[in-house]
Amino acid sequence: METIKLQEIFDAKIEKGDTIEPKDWMPENYRKTLIRQISQHAHSEIVGMLPEGNWITRAPSLRRKMVLLAKVQDEGGHGLYLYSAAETMGISRDEMIDQLHSGKAKYSSIFNYPTLSWADIGAIGWLVDGAAIMNQVMLQRTSYGPYARAMVRICKEESFHQRQGYEIMTVLAKGTPEQKELAQDALNRFWWPSLMMLGPTDKESPNTEQSVKWKIKRETNDEVRQKFVDRTVPQADILGLKIPDKDLKWNEAKNGYDFGEANWEEFFNVVKGNGPCNKERLSARVKAHENGAWVREAAAAYAARESKRGNNGN
Ligand code: BYC
Image (cartoon, rainbow, N blue to C red; front, top):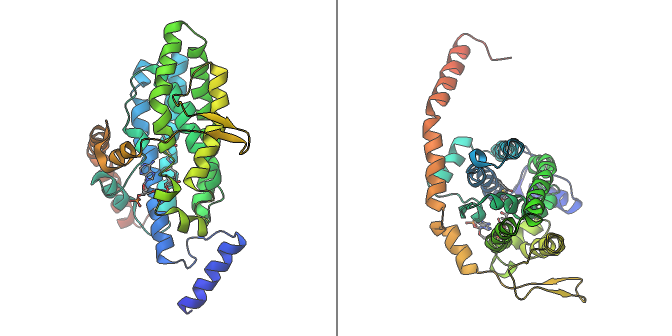
């Protein structure tokens, strides 16, 4: 079929709100944008296991340890669904991993900040998973079918993660003065990076306009950020903690909070690879990949032997 006709069919599907499926024709830039976004998302889930993994051996009780272990495993699972969703667009897992390890592909800025205390685990669940959900709820309706379907399960798990983080914060905020101080300190350090993880302002975001047209993104970065602030400020009030923003103020007319400007210079610097933990995170991933080489080799040798025997594994 002619490209013009195929483009018309694609446009009509997007207009109607139908999903685009792997075998459907799609514009090359739609494919590229999705590979970029889904693979970055997958990398974020995998790299995101590191800051929390840092506290598994130091969780304050067996119960906390079990919950944290399960959460970190969930993030690994999210990464795997997302790599699979990206693979349906014609990129291999190996290529994506190479792009991450060579620094060509990005992962979320938020995971380049250190986890200095146990309260940071609470703050990550509450704020980082909380911000991620705001963004991911809309992605359940993203126009690419496999991505939308992966997001349904991911969102269910993320909302449990948000609750476990908030519960940690509740216990600390209602605990001893020292515990409350730890909770406040974690909020102070994670608040602005959590706002920034939702992406640059709409004015500075080169991809948003087209992604909204294609219904890849259903809301802009600033719209999601506003929702996150409106949802989170009352939660901080319940905890008796203070959001570190002197410009934060309820605005009756817009039925939402006004809030201050994040440090976007810091954001772009972190995205470029110069955040506090970028090097550490990447080298941990590369090392894990190298340590797993023997598993990949053994699996490939097994598959080759089985195919020689004519056993296709079914
Ligand atoms: N960090 O035009 P824009 C989780 C880049 S993990 C780094 O607005 P877009 C969890 C952007 O890539 C969930 N880079 O881009 C896991 C672009 O650069 P390129 C993470 C960022 O794509 C473990 C440039 O800046 N969530 O929940 O339209 C434990 C311009 O930006 C960031 C997702 O990945 C950033 N924060 O919008 C706990 C959600 N922001 O690629 C929790 C899926 C922007 O053109 N992703 N950049 O060179 C998205 O929804 C979108 O990609 C974004 C950015 C809203 C993040």
